Length: 220
Image (cartoon, rainbow, N blue to C red; front, side, top):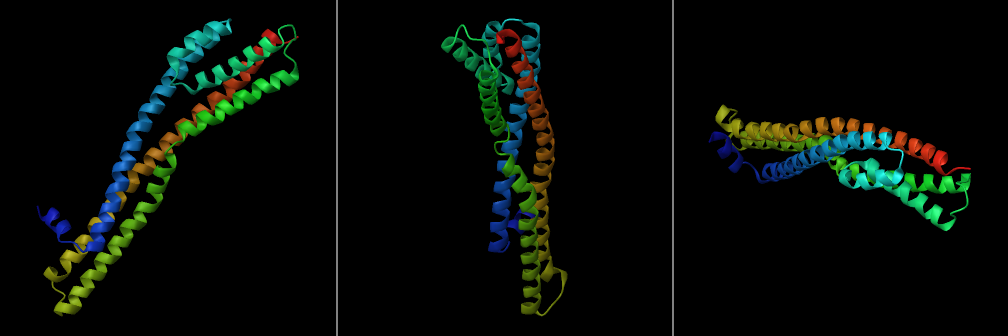
């Protein structure tokens, strides 16, 4: 109750600082939980899809099975490459897969890879911003709270605990709020960035493997 009373009686600037920090904290936690589910599904379905892809010798069968694993970024790569191969085969059914046509397939894979990377990295910048900015916002609230405490000392001409305690309390709350918003965001950002890099590596390896299979199946 004393804690809530300290917040409700805080200076208007400190209140605004706390509101901003609460916004950053709530929004970053929403991103953390959402990103956790997204990356978990992407990783688990990627493992399953890779097994299906590596066990099958027929790309059309893999294409049918891929519909079950759309959460995996590799599915988007496969479908882009497969569709480009189908287009190349349809336009030139008797012509083997030359280096120019293979480069067209590679461009389709690169475009799909870039789209999937953008999806995986979506809202990661907000976590990075939260982790780097909120401690300074909290520090601003801290400095302001200390200024309020000194101002009260000047007005009441007393440095007693009852005079400085409210201002110091506001300052400490702002500091704690800034750290509460920043620490989870930094931890989540570093953790998710590592997992995204792993998925990007898998996409790069998959693209090379897909091109190799396409060259073997449709080459001269």
